[in-house]
Length: 238
Ligand code: G3P
Ligand code: CA
Image 1 (tube, rainbow, N blue to C red):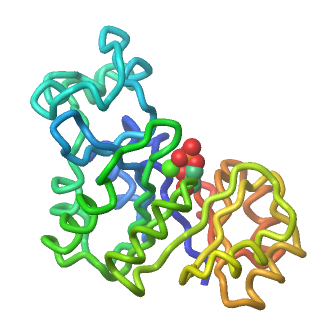
Image 2 (image 1 turned 180 degrees about the vertical axis):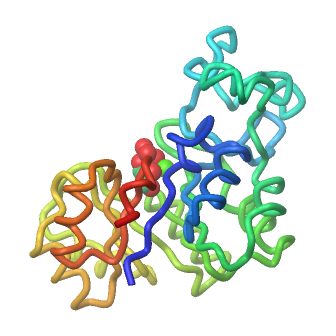
């Protein structure tokens, strides 16, 4: 079965990475959700993709890491999407974990590049343990050192290696990390049959991002991917 991830919530359904967007994705039958985490100034895990808030509220200058959670909770990130979502604020990972049912596969991406969040792995680990949310989970990152830290904290936790740029033989790289990688998340633009086959031979699932057009989705499914990330879950409906 192909596992389709609602990317950032999904972001065509509501303000990306927020609770209303995730609730919409669930209403539309999403079985898997991807979200991004960062740390506030007071070390709280918030769910947001960009390192700045400006794209969601042009009055909110500066970096996520320079705001306390209380300050972030004052910022409306919904009005820029549509009036329907006016007053929506960023969610903490705690808030998300309270709402997303445990049978939904959750891919939590640690956003650790270029801003490095010292201690984000430990904070994430304790949050997941508090919520008993160590199943139906993939922790991914473009920062593979963060994945190594997660494995040290929780051996056996499913790890997804994110690759934006094309590299030679990512399957060999994955093996050589010595990490217990469960999936490879390559940019969809360079995901081809060889990559899929070689990764799967080594037991890695392949989840390319971000696939928004129906034609590309069907092409990748035909090539044998295990799932995709999409901003537009409508493409999953036949
Ligand atoms: O995890 C897949 C995808 O979300 C990675 O890229 O920049 O959308 O977080 P980005
Ligand atoms: Ca992401």
